[in-house]
Image (tube, rainbow, N blue to C red; front, side, top):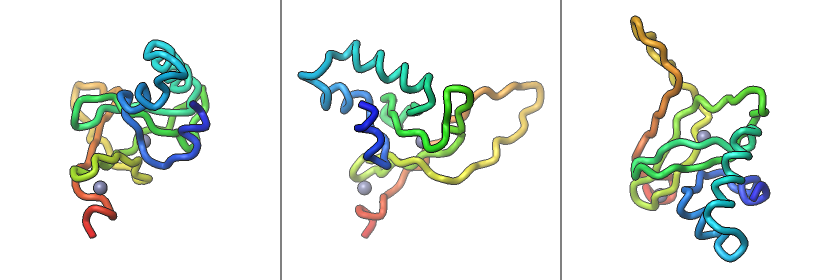
Amino acid sequence: MQRYFGDRSTAVSVVDLVEHFRGEMNKVTVYRILSRMEAEGIIHSFSGSDGLKWYAACKQCTNHSHYDHHPHFQCKVCGMIECLEISLPIPKLKNRKVDTEIILLIGECETCAS
Ligand SMILES: [Zn+2]
Ligand SMILES: [Zn+2]
């Protein structure tokens, strides 16, 4: 499964992962491997606009620190999601502590827009 993520630059939904590895391993095993790989800093997860959990390969994470505070882009035509190599500033909120951010930009990808 690690090789599966290593070869791709876009994210993949948990539904597609279970489907892809059907026959090799069951759903529970897929979930277990995903959570281990996430803990080790190999992949990261986020929610797509469909409410599904999506996974993508991490670029420079280790099991000590995750650098996953980047927005994602989802194409509304083909549905693909990719990591954006940019950082958006998180606003300071008075009297509130922010743990995580989920920023999903939605539009048309390069292929679908042309
Ligand atoms: Zn597209
Ligand atoms: Zn990402």
